Length: 270
Image (cartoon, rainbow, N blue to C red; front, side):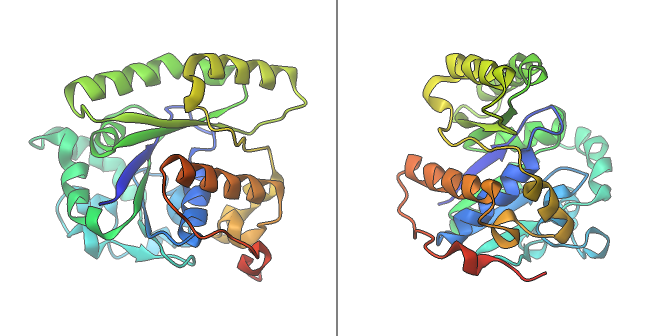
């Protein structure tokens, strides 16, 4: 049975979708079968994995409102073993429609349960809010992965996020755990970044991944081509970091994996 990980942070621009796309791509390349579920109406994980949002037959919106079965909405990607239930702007109206549904916090969980035996890992890319879509993700997930950039403002909303996770665990999902914290947009030369990292380490301790994701232009360029950094430039500092993060993630989960020996061969010609 697969492990479901919600990647969440109510702040935008923290590297949440970047982490979802690239971590899932590397884990798939290491021999695992992975599904990304995009529950952000912006659909950035969808486009980042090479899908055209305007041409989708079905999306996660159709799954949530019951217009199609979850397996009907699954699309393949350019990475072997990596699949996605995509999102588009239709999802923006789902919050309103979910409000009146019975067990509204459990709709996504109910949809994903039949898929659990078909994947090793399911990653849910959450919207930058703590509204009903994110609550659905936390109810469906086994754990939460939290990307936090090395900036002061990243600390401001942290208590709100942790309180939401605490309430979700108390009332909706008693098994919910913190998968870990990933430090993103990291600049080790900055005193501020290092100070923020120290505060996060004090708060989360061993839950903080040792791998830190640096600021890297190539990470920002890859989504415009619909590619993960593994396909776009695996030898960039961002590519090396996300490969290391994937290895650390699988090691923490006591999951054997196939090491990537020739990362250059993964690059897609543009």
